[in-house]
Image (cartoon, rainbow, N blue to C red):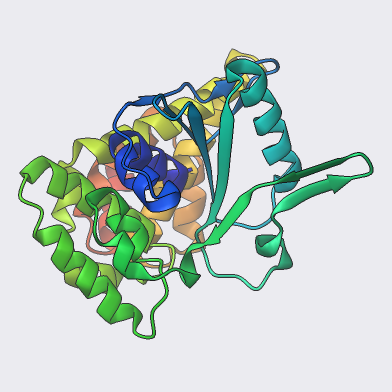
Length: 292
């Protein structure tokens, strides 16, 4: 969910960058469409409408090749709903983020007896990083691109981030870069090149946290208020665990058990302070404080 929300933020903030990269177009008359598609609501990752070209760019970002329902069927379902709602040309692109040898990342169509539906597939680890480093909105994706020297690539991206003149933009892009780089780089290496303080100070970091939590709540409402709160708590717990692992390394089983017992409010508080932790001892002290 962290990666989805990071990429949704980038597409919504920098749609021109993605349109230029994926469609080779310099369209400026752009509208971000709602991503919840009627009839029975499903939510796409990103839907961008190029008004001048009367075209929709639909993006799906995948960290894992497997999904339920299978991705090809989902892409057909998205296309039908979009076409029914907007009746225009639709360009669909699936971007796989994490290297894998799974055959699923090479599938670009749904086929059954009477229907064939095709879409574009991009395996980001096969892409040249240079075009991605030309635009701020694509810089975080550049950390996942093709390279013979991952450390050098991360350093190059960090340099490009440091050259962004506008302070708020630099901070937001730095945070997104660190979050996406976590898919392939160890936290210690990321910290060598990018300011960890940007995480705690950044509004986008807090926005991503809250959006992830809100999605968990919204999904849970369908099963009742009590289940919705629990799903929101589990969503926050997963996010906090990922952040703690990146910050401190592996967390011992005893501490994991204690984290499982935290309430939603306590997990939200932990998400705000964990970037100040330097060791498991800091986490243990914080847990002892709230339990005393």
